[in-house]
Amino acid sequence: MAYILLTGGAGYIGSHTALALLRAGYKVISFDNYSNSSTTALQRVEQLAGAKVISISGDIRDEAALQTVFRQYPINAVVHFAGLKAVGESTKMPLHYYDNNVAGTVTLCRVMREHKVKKLVFSSSATVYGDAKTVPIAETAARSATNPYGQSKLMIEHILEDLVQAEPDWSISVLRYFNPVGADSSGQIGEDPNGMPNNLMPFIAQVAVGKRASLSIFGNDYATHDGTGVRDYIHVVDLAAGHLKALQYLSKHQGIEAINLGTGTGYSVLDMVKAFSKVNNVAVPYNIAPRRAGDIASCYAQPDKAFNLLRWQAEKTLDDMVRDSWRWQRQNPNGYSNS
Ligand code: NAD
Ligand code: UDP
Image 1 (cartoon, rainbow, N blue to C red):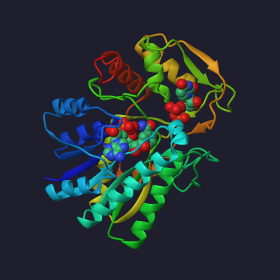
Image 2 (image 1 turned 90 degrees about the horizontal axis):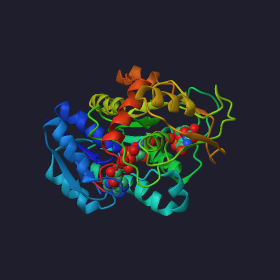
Image 3 (image 1 turned 90 degrees about the vertical axis):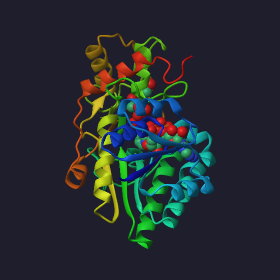
């Protein structure tokens, strides 16, 4: 029975991956400091899976706490979700972001090496492509970053590449997620942003449920089919499945591979608003606002590498994404908090 350690396992993507792993028969250990999540998420995962998660409260920068976990359990591989992800906040607190994301990852890798656990799946992001010159974006595209969050992901990618260069017996998948949305179809687990959502889908859902009056669409003068920004939205359940495929791949291959996890299809902000309203039969009032600083017109994946290496491709549709996001929002108007 394989033990998989999920750092940040209580978070949005971590909790969905925990569920998928439990259902596939893995033993799941979550190591999370709950800086952006709730213990309720993993309790619900346990109910849904009918199996236990070994939940440990701890910080990846705390080497002694990590040592204890690696001594206690025969860990086969690590899926490393733990990190801070708010772009705006990262520009105000760069040291906090570099410490948490970069220093935390270095500490994790050091402890892994000491315990001879050298299989790692890392949560990277399409943000490492910066303002890509062409779409769809392949893994070979130039990388750049425009804010400390993106820099932290890029730095970690470089660190992991250097690590494999020096110690070729590591097996590392760098998964570059595009725009995760949706929720488990039970509506029991989902994305629970703190305060005002930065991302489009939770904002739409909060407008639909009446928590916010109107969605501000950031710009309708981009060079896209309707003038609004285009992104590659990917259902979180598909994303979770991609992690299982990556773990299977790592069990047979050494070295490092960066792999896009996206659908390969771009939808505009207006496409998303319209699909959400139509499929869920709910109004989403919106207004056109100025462009958001740092935004790009269009970003979507060339997803072939994931299929060729992992035999993974996204299966959920846009309708699934908006339906499942709405079910989670409707059933949990205040996320995991009861207030
Ligand atoms: P999330 O905030 O829901 O989950 C991250 C989890 O990590 C949280 O539970 C948080 O409490 C935990 N955590 C943060 N710092 C920690 C630390 N120092 N020690 C232990 N635990 C810590 O975010 P998510 O959306 O599930 O994202 C997971 C990963 O995927 C992150 O690394 C994020 O940067 C990356 N990613 C997310 C998106 C997205 O849009 N959601 C896109 C691309 C990449
Ligand atoms: N967006 C918007 N209003 C919002 C949030 C986002 O119009 O309140 C747009 C944003 O300009 C972009 C798209 O929705 O074109 C996706 O934004 P998000 O922040 O979710 O993802 P990212 O820009 O990081 O890819």
